[in-house]
Image 1 (cartoon, rainbow, N blue to C red):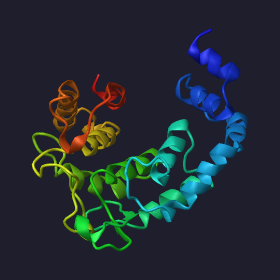
Image 2: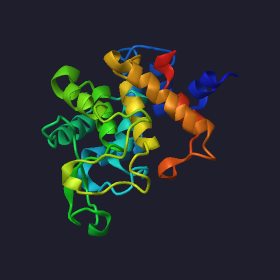
Image 3: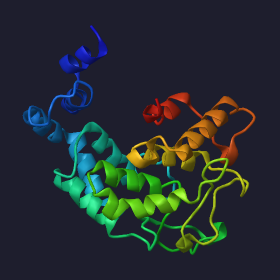
Image 4: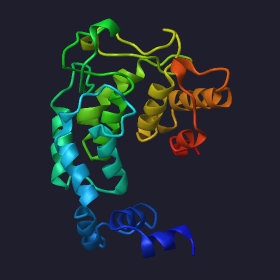
Length: 244
């Protein structure tokens, strides 16, 4: 029995729904009953409640799986969208906090000894802002009207080696534990994820250059690991599909 058949015969409802929608490419209309069953799953309902209460957790550690942005992206990857009220609420809360450059902000707290104010404040880092833009894009938010300005602004930070550790003015002098001139591998990776989902950037030189820089870091991970990041190849491949 192949993997897809195994999932369809034995998988949980949300996984069956994601497989039929994203792999088999069945229409949402034909999957309406399965979709309702998936939405009724207790774990999915928990995730939906968590994303609806979007700013309930301060962004202190960007790899924390409990952050609402990661749960929102998981739900969007499964195949749920803004037709689900909790996702619509989450995207609305994200869009209420945008700076003058079109970049959406997260609620965070940077201690004074790390260069911040020590207070809860809305701001953005280049290691979270691309994910917010990506989530809004996946949720069907109009790109030209609500996203393009922010994407273009983040793109402007690109350097030859990739994307550096960058923060909004609200976060003061904070930056990650690395040399100022190094690229931030994680920021570069999620910028690649964002750019690869946008037609005008998908095969642009900046996207290809970023991908090649990340691959170079992976190939030389034991010798070069700026900001103390080491790479796993599967994470890189997942963001390079549009280049082939």
